Length: 67
Image (cartoon, rainbow, N blue to C red; front, side, top):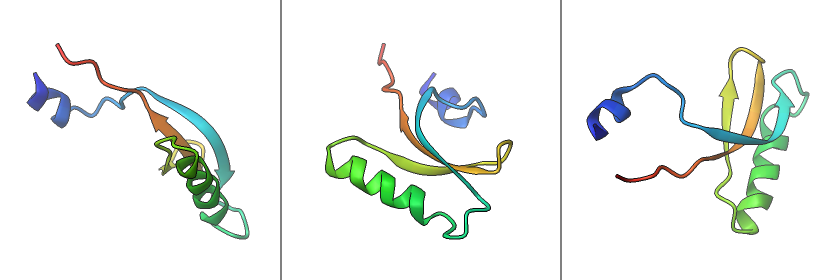
C-alpha cells in the first residue's frame, strides 16, 4: 500500500496558510518569507506552486495515519 501511495497522483491533504500571486513583483519571496516565519514558530510550512490558480501557496501537509 505504501508503494501505491508513493506512486499515486492524488494530492495528499493539505492546509493552505497563505497565497501569493505568481505575478507578484517580488515573485516567490513573499511566500518564502511567510513560510520561514511559520517554520520559526515550529510549523512545518512549505511553499508549492499551484498551476490552476497561478499562485505560490504556503501549505502544511496533513499527517498520514499509519495502519
